[in-house]
Amino acid sequence: MSADWLRELEKPTSAFFQAFAQRAAGDQGPRNAARDAVQNLTPLVDWPAYLPHIPHGLLGLGAAFRLRPLLAEASFLRILSTQIHAFALEARGRGLEALGSGSWANLDMALATHRPAIAWGEAMGIPEVGPADFQRLESRVERDMANVGHKAVMARDLGELFRDLEAPRTGGRLLLAVAAYLCASEPFDTFWHQRAARRLEGVAPVPHRAPEADPSSHAAAAREICDSGLVDLLDSFSLRVRAGAGSGDLLASLVLAASEKQLDARRDLEGKTSWNFVYLAHLAKRSLDAGPLAPETWVQGAALVNLFPTDEPEDRPRGVPPRAPAADPARGLLDAILDAEPQQAMFHAEELLALGKEGAVLGVLAEAATTNDPAFNHSHQVLSVAAAADLVPHLPGPARGAMLAALAKSLANSQGSTDLGRLADKALDAINN
Image: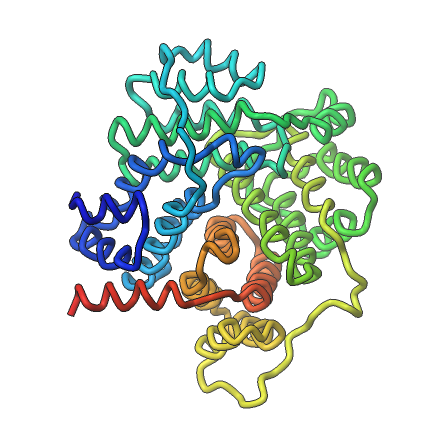
């Protein structure tokens, strides 16, 4: 690691992207640059200042690696560099002391009594960090929906980043310490969990299985999620769980409802509403690798989606053809997003979906997300598209299509500055040419 790159991480200047381009060169360059960011920046962040929120520069870093298979290498390097840049701009503080014995008993106590500083220190004392440590944290906080479920999502996403970076000892401890710090923090909110558990007493965990119900059943459940008050929603969705619905059918209904909420989102709420997809992707992956989930966990997801506002159907945006037909619908979709034309973006997304080209839509959404400055939208675009990529394999066709069309509208409606991405491209081109 060069001294120039280390200086740019600690205090970014106009030379940041040139230093990144040098560090990211070669097969392992991107991983090394991200490792450097984790190891050198994590101790500098003023973590207490963010509570109950989290700095999305770090969370978006993991999302960038999940999008890598969908992107050309130049686009991946663009989003990786801008995410690291966003992380480098996070508020600085004195850092947290790494004092702890590495005892999981002490760490569990810190989680139970909401002592984040102790949780940080104990996590930093764990000698060998592995994926199971992040999963253990995630299981401890799955009932806690404070800050719309950020804690469990953060634990999983940082575990995936640990895997993608093949994090060395210190970097792995830091990632685990961040997750532990957030999981132990206040506020602590089990309101939805308690009310769901009361309705589901004695019900077996929800089995993980592919969707079995017909699309009309998923659509009916989505209507309940969108239109009911919270108490009625808890009742009706709990009845569906009691009736034996599997994870695939519950997820399809939740994604359909989340897609409608995304279509209804005001421009200033696009990013916050897209968090629904991030949380639902977390549920889908946890159901797959942790076995059957407690039934109230799925009801918590329904309550989260229900929390966001729903418009009248006649006010909902719909696809509108562009003024001039596009020879290539994929190019038309990208241009509509970058030109901030949400209804035209929906039109092109639906055009591609009708042709069975879901992969092309997802690829364009990923490319569009790489152009946007993460600091402008708190990385919500890259987070939501990465979540969509995670969700697609678990969903039936109607739910996949609704989600992708809603995200096309959302990305077009939340466009920000692309100047930072162009600076990154210029620096990377200079190295490669």
